[in-house]
Image 1 (cartoon, rainbow, N blue to C red):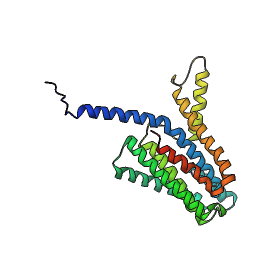
Image 2 (cartoon, helix red, strand yellow):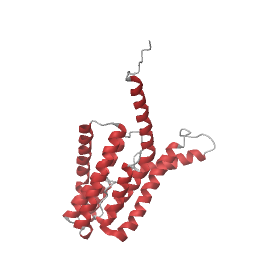
Image 3 (cartoon, helix red, strand yellow):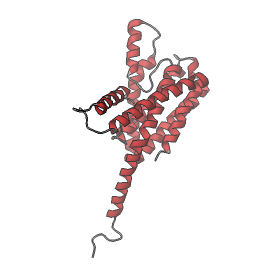
Image 4 (tube, rainbow, N blue to C red):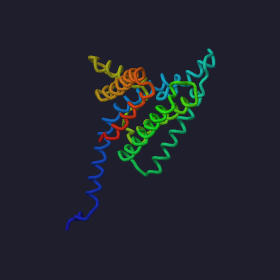
Length: 243
């Protein structure tokens, strides 16, 4: 008699594992370019409507705060508090992930929902309070906190649920990968990198996605002002449907 009877759970577990691996592979291929587009929109919109705050490239705020301290200018608490706000947001996302007990694609879907809800809250808050009218005010600081929290959720998603995906935030690294991979592919001999175009394609997709997000946000900010936050919120909703 076969050891694997019809009631045995082993084949089903193997099937579930294969399905999960396939789902993760699809998410790692489809999500990061879209998330890069969202990150570009959030960063540009935040910078030009919330008083020169980097909401995606958070560490850039350290440079801005240092320039103000040395060269003078309008001091922004949001720039100084960006790192601790981002750290708290990341820790909160970690707690949500741990409490959910989810992993892989299931966790990715949960964190995509969290990112969408934060961006939706940011949109509603911005439309009601008009933080762009007072970029150095309390409303602008609150909006910047929400924007940075949404980005913290996105970056934590990639690390916790899709560790095989390249970051959507490190544009310097993506540009470096793209240039070096291109040079290596064009070299007739003595290549320095593995002969694989995947790294180049992934880096280009994220880089171009981020740049496109900035370009679209530029037009949206000039035409829609605080309503420009509707675009990253809409894309976050689309990201939840990516399977």
